[in-house]
Image 1 (cartoon, helix red, strand yellow):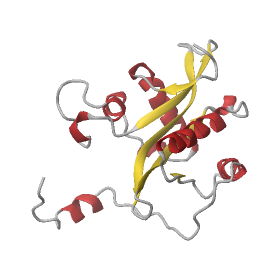
Image 2 (cartoon, one colour):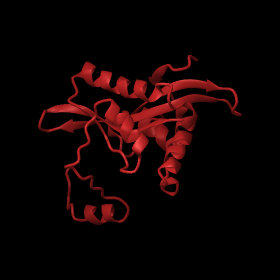
Image 3 (cartoon, helix red, strand yellow):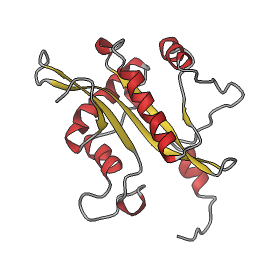
Image 4 (cartoon, helix red, strand yellow):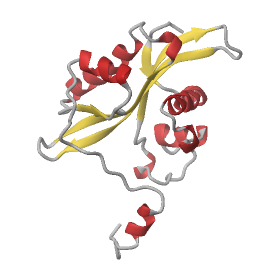
Length: 185
């Protein structure tokens, strides 16, 4: 293990990533909303490891990727091995006709901030965009999260103030789904 190494997550990393997701949710005052389990995250990150097509995952292929930063900390029991993660997936711009990356979560453990891990995770995704000719790298930030906003602005990110995020979840999602009628596979 090399401290500061950025790499793709492995199945062995999943329990620690789930722990960091919970840490992030607690910071964002939403811990009670977290439902992810290590099994769920393994399925979306690594596809069908057991022979059947997982729900919500096309033909068992991963739909989401995660980069992690290695940081071995022996002061914890068991020792922590990860300092942060960036969980992302592909999106698409109809206007450019090209894919982009949507960064779902970028998290660096609070005691490790200021060491450049967040910048290195974000720049890794930017490099993937350049390498694969993706049109953009996007994410959302809570309005009150000034440290994150300041960090992103320092990297020349632009706030998309003219756009408002909408979401269907909970009972609204199956309610609208009933209006779909028959849908071809």
